[in-house]
Length: 127
Image (tube, rainbow, N blue to C red; front, side):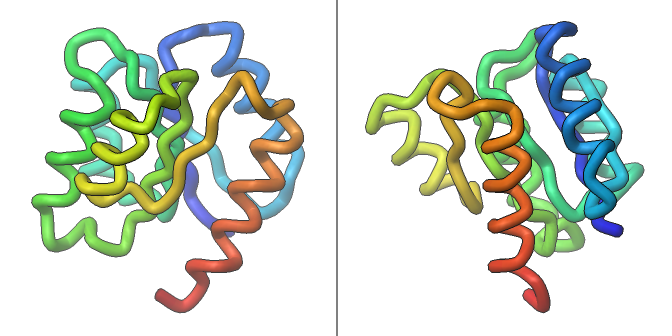
């Protein structure tokens, strides 16, 4: 089972996505709602996948992404941006900082997001 950390500050969305991902036997899910807490969880739990919102309290998703990518021992962690910010600038910056995928929340149902993350997990299997 793959470890998935969902970093999202909206309590209602966290509940929805945690339930959806927990119903699927592919993932062991943990959650975080703020930047500094999320950073600690990433370093302590070493998740296989991080679903990372860009707009967060304390520090934004770009800052978290940049810190993770500077750590050699976290290079296997796959980071999927999970945001409603979807302008070319945000997508480009996420890619430059090392994101492994980009999902726009408002364009997908919760089930579609679960399916997309599973699809990315299969793509990255063995890397």
